[in-house]
Length: 295
Image (cartoon, rainbow, N blue to C red):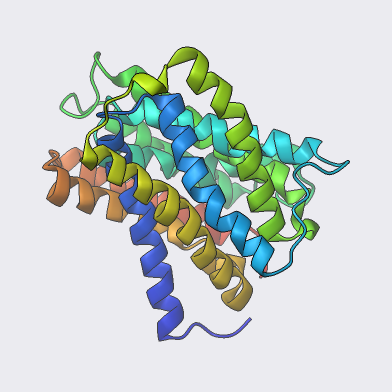
């Protein structure tokens, strides 16, 4: 893996900005689309370019091969469930808050990895990082301007969505030799299969009369925040390695707060900024002590 150059830093910032911007776009999309339908259309938009990428590179898609079960399970836990939960949560909380709560993924992932992997055990320093990070999240719950009795359950739902990302990430480790393009495309296709009947059964999407703003936001979520972002992530991974790519975790909540404040006119309190700092410190300590990830 080469030393990071200017283009690598630019792509890392771009990836952080894209993923950080996904939360205010989810918020806008929820104005017209219900959660299952929102998640469904998002993964349809994402699966199309991924499918044609695999065709172009002549990569075999194993979604429906004899070994289909792990792809289906990851598609459910790593895409369908978290996309739906995040849509539900973001519909009732500030978009920047969703970005900050989602930043708990590295911390919850470290806890789960301790029990379900061999080389990612929790150390003393990592424990300190986890405690500090979650302290920042708990601190948010005392800011009644941001989280109150009317929306705290939606904040918890968003955290649950983050946890499913961690669960899906651990499952994905078992398929790391199957190729990123194949795994991502196969799991995305399975998420479409799971979400389609749920959308049709519970939300009657054919009765929707969505606004152009919500539809454009949803298109952005699928093509840019899911499809294009994955391609950028894959390029960073192959050129600079996993350690460099994971630094995007620091950028997502920062960009989320900036977009929420400047584009959505969401209120940023002093407690929010303190919480953001505490969470980023926690993430830093956790990632600094991820001994199992070397490159």
